[in-house]
Image 1 (tube, one colour):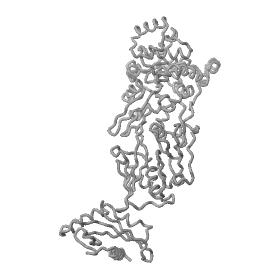
Image 2 (spheres, chains in turn purple, blue):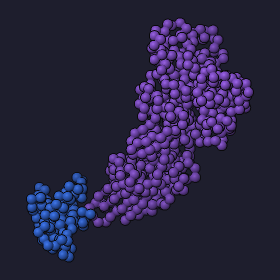
Image 3 (cartoon, chains in turn purple, brown):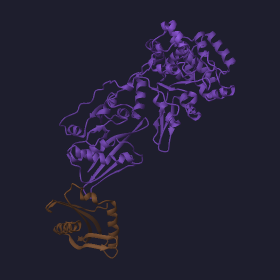
Image 4 (cartoon, helix red, strand yellow):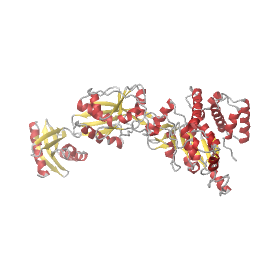
Length: 509
Length: 117
């Protein structure tokens, strides 16, 4: 008896249909074999399927069972073939009909219930693209799949409940998508901007970074509040737009980072890896390439604290994703594209001891040490960072005593309002360009959307000559000025916008 | 009762079963340097080699599970040795799995034809 069940496999963010073909022969010794290049996790599926069927109160057929995962030349990995294999055996044992036009996907537990399986969203998207009307996924992953409209998502609790559905005894209803609250879907700013005393310039720079998606580097002495500012950053980031949400959720679904019952991610991701992270950990990799921190920070913030402590090789791998917003990871088994459009927020000390230009403490570093330390962050990386800002030491005691800073301190919520407003302007502007922020503009878009006032053009030309700005730096300055103008709700870029943008530019001293 | 006697009982049950089905038993426990073939029979001018597995109860595993790849390979080698001195080249390897209950009564008997495909 020959049976066929449709499923699909995810490779990176791409999905490919897989037919699970099962032949149950009446002759020959009883065996249970899986062919079609199964990895260990797929091969072990035999034991899970056998035990789950027995524990669902059914008989496991004592026949010669050969399972073929077609196309047979692509290596298969993952635990989600359990459900399609089990369904075909159920169909043999109970004579129920395998529904047509349906995908099955899920890992079995030994007791016959289904476990949360990563990649359910990608599967649902694949089903929709290929006009497959029904998908059967584990209960815990069903809400994630139900994000996709226009297909029927069936939430399968256990093999026995699925069997009742297939036998038409107790029909399941397609799941309605519900938005849920879970930790990774909440903004998790540890500090409010109002808690950071002083640092008006740094706060302004962070606001610009959040509004336009620009990269930012903060340099300052220990304890001046660099880390605190960066940790307050999630609180002023705008919510993700629909398209962005889907992109981010896809990556998290592929990485298996969506918790059971999770829904679409609407909050900008915020990733802060330690500086001992490996190159592969940062950009992704492995024989079946997994997304790295840069991809997990897609449409959000990648905060690299103590930037100068990162090994040179680790830092340099950021170059290409910073420019292109995506990267291709090629390995022998597969080549995978991941998006990686993130805001790089970095912080560093000005010198090894950290007290260079400190108002009270004496810097103990030699000239040579300082020069060497500054060289740790390479020119190409610095060139890609639009906003360079000094975070000087503030006398917090004095500031809070006099109450001077306190009354002007703005809360994160207030700053966020302005950021959202600026983002809305950008959304309106780029609605036909398939980009979201000013930082993503290409040269033709800069020509189209960045009208410089005459005085603004003059000041920019003068600065280009005197600071020796690179071509990239020139265009990056215009993009930053565009964001500053958007924050001021100005249509054209005026002189003061360019002047402010130039002030954040990296200057070699 | 030890396993050797259990095996003998199983083999005689299998032999009766096959004779009822029209097989002619040529040899029982054919032995050579590679091991033993439980039953050698003839039906429709085809030599059939039968491996018999017997178990009392199934709580410690089914007799089917005991016929693994190694066992089958051993059987194939053995059969090849046997066939060298025969003019007939039509043959088949079968398995018969027998489960007895506590009183050594037959609970089930399954005949699997051509287990080497």
